[in-house]
Image (cartoon, rainbow, N blue to C red):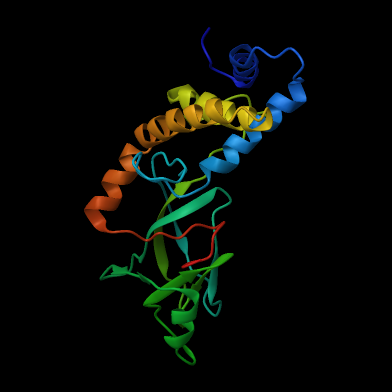
Length: 217
């Protein structure tokens, strides 16, 4: 059967497990655990660890608030790509760690040169004007539910959802061999779904910072 929405994914996981003792609530939990895995930074299929999934970048623009040293992250933020001030001339801002941005901090106000990320975007100096900015980032994957029945990942790569859910299900059932097999399937599928991400990283160099994980941890 096709897997195009949350209900069909639940049915598919149940069918593949062939365990009548598992409830819909348990299957939903396996899917939720799979979605927590997707938030991780993507890794090549050859990595010994399990990575996450990234789709296409999102771009947005706005203006900084004069006198405010931070900028709120987008609600669907997963990972930074680039941030620049679109004044004339355009000024790409340089990403540094939270520790480094404190070392670069300048007194008073001015035009930012550096930024860091914690729960907000923080600048090396408080903006002295409402500078226009452009931000590009990789968005998070909207979790599936009875009210949000699909997303881009399920539509384009249902095998990513199925393999990750099956991996967690077999861990729950203590079927280690099956869990390892599905983990391998997930690595292949997740790497395929993240090809655009890998190409972008190779062409411009990484800003590998995620909202869920502090830099260098």
